[in-house]
Length: 116
Image (tube, rainbow, N blue to C red; front, top):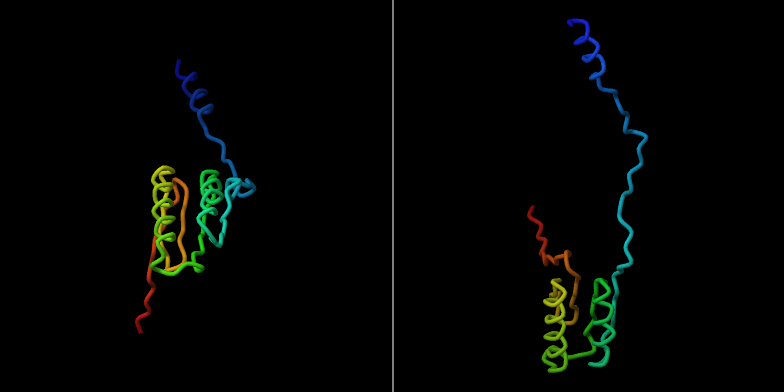
């Protein structure tokens, strides 16, 4: 009766596993890319929309348009609707640069200041 417990205790002894040689994948493979697009006209919005729905991060250059251009405002409004539909993010970085990201990838605008 007492000898049986000693054998069970020996079986419960845990083995040491060295994980130094284990190579885990560093990142998951994805077909998504960062696409930088110079928007020239309202017709470009269709291609931008298609690329965004494929999960790409869209960096959009609107430098061809003036800041108060109604076409630019209309396209920005449409891109915001696409971001809501994708559950993604849309932001204007500057007067001529906008970013549209897919779901699960938020955009943070930061201003870095140095204090000495």
